[in-house]
Image (tube, rainbow, N blue to C red):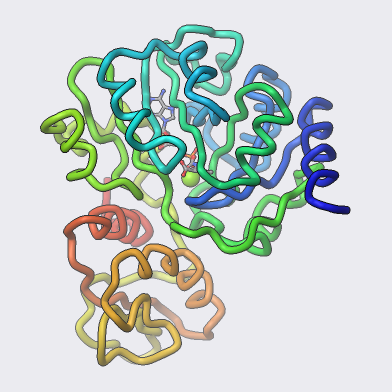
Length: 306
Ligand code: TXA
Ligand code: MG
């Protein structure tokens, strides 16, 4: 099939209440019609996801997002600056049918994002409404950043899949709530500094973790136990490096580039699982810029965050 036929086929699967493996610029998603509770239930089932963890509604255009959610001036500014792209906004819900109760886990807020990947955009346009799309991993596991990894995680539950190649960014979108003060609920591909340049200082995320119900302790986790900030490996460990002087091939970025490390992170955790080692040691990674999101995922993958 050619690309246009693949898109039509995937849109038809969604209209029939089926699930679709969806490439985005961040990670692969498992997409369903956001307005269809039965389709959304299949997503939770395929992921083995606790039903209290709400999903992101993906849209092709900001106009669709404005119908679903109540945009204030700060939301308009953030969308104008970062959409399409790796930023999710949590806003008061405006249309409770467009994104069903189950997709919002019963909350009166809704998370919206307009992804930048051309295939995601094309599918959203062809489908014509919002799609929920959590990362296509089974709950708690590393997010898939290649089509093969996505298919291996939840492909069995999908009626169709779009292969968009390896994800350019490799880390999930940044989640910002605009309910009272702007809050960072999940650090991600758009950095804290980039958000603050638009809306001013953000409240601390961790102090408010309960508001982002998805932020469970052990999350994004490989099968093997992990040890962070490891300056040298111990017996039996595979070492994920960062910067010059670390062994190949599992150096997240030999050049010490955070964007490259983000893009490699989840695929390398999977590769480490397959390496035959008994544990994973990860070299120190700077915490500035994209490093905040990388270190957040590493702490959760290691189970350090309660
Ligand atoms: O990059 C991404 O955002 C990827 C791609 C596929 O678009 N999707 C993704 O979805 O990471 P998911 O479901 O794995 O993560 C959604 C996050 C969770 O932490 C969830 O708790 C939070 O967004 N979230 C969703 N709706 C929310 C709401 N109403 N209030 C607070 N947090 C919300
Ligand atoms: Mg996820």
